[in-house]
Length: 113
Image (cartoon, rainbow, N blue to C red; front, side, top):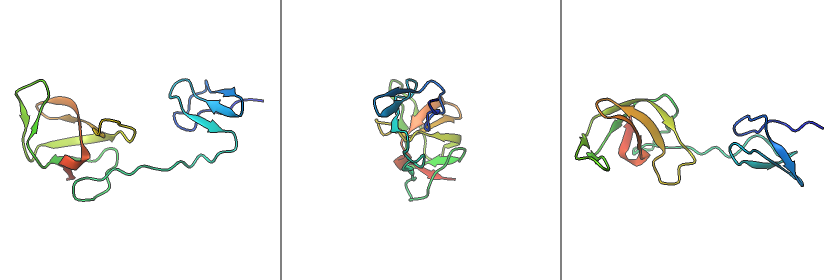
């Protein structure tokens, strides 16, 4: 019997452990007959608009950058965002901010442009 690829990251290295299938790359566990349609987490901006990968967002509040004296000013745009639905620290947007470089932002401090 061949083991199917991981439904979360599509890794081919999944293995069986009892009645569970486990992916060693992303640590996802599932059962053989389980539906691939997992609960989709939606990330919304400060106005309640649903964000998606590739969107452009605008900062709505001056944000201090940790470890620096710089500040990301109101109205600064972040283009081509990538959403991080599994973020445990609340920083659920990964993006590149012009003049500052790559950083993570919280969706509550941005609005969809």
